[in-house]
Length: 558
Image (cartoon, rainbow, N blue to C red):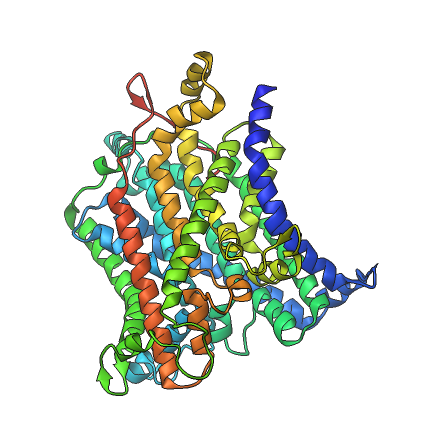
């Protein structure tokens, strides 16, 4: 009985948060689209689904997400190993740099990839090859975005796996590959599944990349929802597509929960500082060189294009576009100097990170408690914001939070609330494995000695999960800094965020607007990289949870 009360107490605030700021806005959009004059028009669902064009959109959305996920795992898993197990100069700096693409607005990335792959781009000039308006441009841009998800999610756990288990298998006669396949890979299974899930959800709801690089040939559900909502004002069709997207994401989450439960296993965790070592042998040096080459071509080259464009002024290379960000300029694009968007974004991201940490930490603590289907359903709910249209959520905020007692239309907190919805899943996925690593007997001993549940968390759990908490804060901050889909609907004109400011500038003609957009994007890159580097420096060494001197861990769904 006490266990159930504690679990429900931990779930109360996250459930209220998601009900108020996720379920209600999404339900309001669907209701407004399918209910006219108090009458539900459910027949519209069948009409939309059976349209051939919608069928093509749904098919393309699904297979490109699967292809993007597979390609990302194939390219990023070697990188996860390199960052987890190999120690080389500049590792922390490079790990921060590969996270930068994750926060860039999709419109900026699309523009950068057009400069590489489109007419007059680098490939076109060197070899006469163009990949714009092809699916390959979309897939490569998706890998660019999600490389860091795999490196940080899988690499974070890989760095803490005890390498002596794999070494023991080799002593018994197993080859290096066989030892990795039978010992390490099963242990990494939940982390790989979590990374694959997040990549799939992000690519399934891809918007800006497909819209810019795919041209009129390719369209995802997210692009179609935006087109029906913002361009055609066809809310019934947009509502049906939102329901379809919601159902597809729910099915994916159900499959994920079922498969991960079958892979639960006991692990041994050690200090990551003990597992990273200088490369040894030709194989490891070759792998390191290959990963660095992939990062240089796939990550650094597009980022370099952005920096070069920000410095390429009509008067030659210089900081003219950066200096112009200090004034409002002409044309009424902004009510304030674009440079103010930097401070706005940092403030919003800090507030969103605080909200995401509170909600995510409570949710992760609840998921460590036994609860059967209730807990599994709660876990799936936490992931839904990653797979539901940000356009729907942002538009839903406008039509639901516009009257007392929750009239937040003019409040600054509206933006961090929307950003925190996307940050919470990352907090949960980062903290949950470490929380499950805490030996339950430690909690029981503290409780027997009279400690309250809050004190048990403060004295037992918190010291062990402090590192995971800081990593989760970094992810939440980065996600909040780059959120665009919902923020573009609710950011006030006098307080734009960096992604919104970049999109506004790219939406206007002229070299000055384009150069300022590239300059703001460069600033966004620098802010993100510096924040993550600072976080890397303050990360404490993890304390292993040991009983009888043996580090132990119990992982469940990652």
